[in-house]
Image (cartoon, rainbow, N blue to C red; front, top):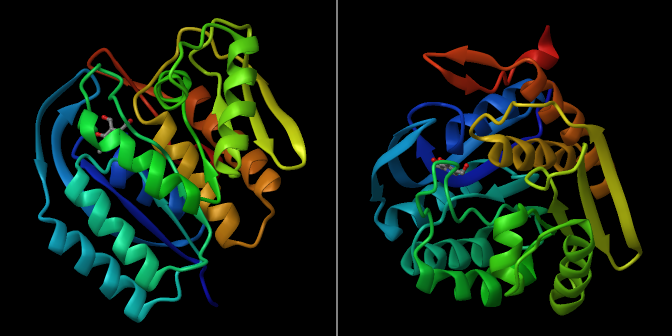
Length: 263
Ligand code: PXL
């Protein structure tokens, strides 16, 4: 039996809820074969980030190169990229080894605890160089506001931002509304064909760390399995909603259950 090959280019979260660790668990739950290129080692738990150690860009490049040499990557995602140097390394590797492969860009900028996961000078490079190559970009409310340049306060401004951004880059944008104060968790996809909404009832008072990473990893699996973008998002939304619903608590922290779909 052949498993679809997926690759995550992201940071390591030792606490296992976000980053590469979340991605690998998600890849398993979707029965995909996960590979990784680690960009940073973050020492953290759901409530705080203690330190960030960037991996040398040459190593990031080699990790991608060697994965691509041995495996026909069917889809990949990027998460925490942190610095201009790492973004440059990733960009070069993508162009050389992953040209034309479906690419989910999760524009990770800030951890749930509020710590910055992307140096401010590097935001510009994400705009100019990475977004145009993506199959879909998946910003949350705050990331979308930074990319758009204006605050997003409600569904109306989220829609306006999504229309603007998808036109500007000619790339699909999935605007995640989880952080808006609406009764439902509403995500809006903007493509050349128009707008599509993905709506589930909000699960009140639950906000575990790593939801964005997990959601984009799930989308990557759908694309690797040959689903269309909308179907990948629908399946991914079902998966992340289950992982949130069936979260568990550890020493006062809410933790995503990446395996709820397997029970
Ligand atoms: O949730 C964003 C995120 C992405 N990647 C890594 C992280 C985090 C949040 O803490 O640690 C590695």
